[in-house]
Length: 108
Figure (cartoon, rainbow, N blue to C red):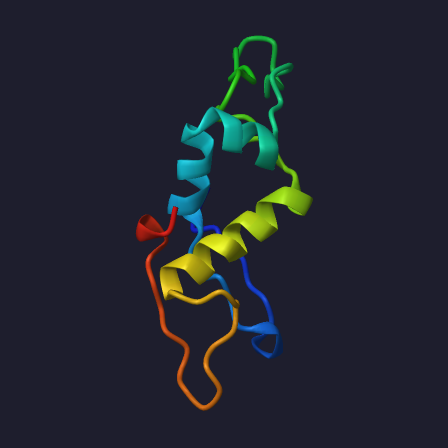
């Protein structure tokens, strides 16, 4: 993943910011991974018969990454992680205050 971001419009509470660390923490936890991603384990990216390519495997692999996000579960998990990092029950900046930023490294 090259700098994955998950953004929401400011009227909805702002962006989630860089999410790579959060995604890899989810990927490292088998239960959360199974809940938030559909793992792709079959196939490869071979396009020329003389070049083997990479196979799809269980968990992260170079062909499919973490797999296909199950957005219905993943997005709420990322929003909850962001809210916990900000120390709030709501994903919204306090009225009149600038949004606080927090690293996803401390969120999950």
